[in-house]
Image 1 (cartoon, helix red, strand yellow):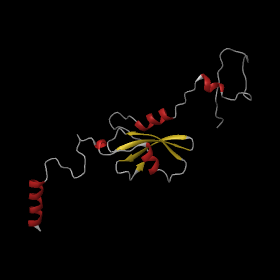
Image 2 (tube, one colour; image 1 turned 90 degrees about the horizontal axis):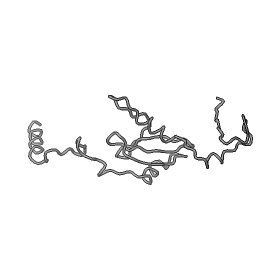
Image 3 (cartoon, helix red, strand yellow; image 1 turned 180 degrees about the horizontal axis):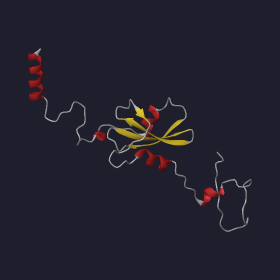
Image 4 (cartoon, one colour; image 1 turned 180 degrees about the vertical axis):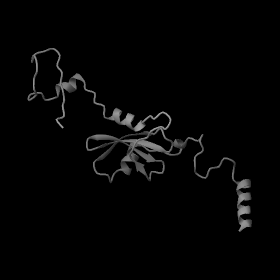
Length: 147
């Protein structure tokens, strides 16, 4: 047995090039050059998840994962898919040192609502509670959730 171990050690020392990592990335290697995921690929991965629509795919701040933005039931979420495309996870991606929550930042960006004047004109206010002058030049619309 010792001879086999010694032979294999010598074989790898002499034959295997220095820096070879057997499929594991070294710290200076850019794995995104060999691995890819686009919206169509991600849509195929999530096809069995009812009501999930893939919106966008990008590299995550963590090597080896893609950040996948989805819409599920009208709500936008951030998921992470690994480079093997075998696993996905949902949860907060936070740096240890700075305590920066990348997932929360992206979630807030995804669910930000920006309305233009044209959008405001489409809001039905016929049954709304009116306070002040109906003909006022500027109007404020307040949305409230009774719960």
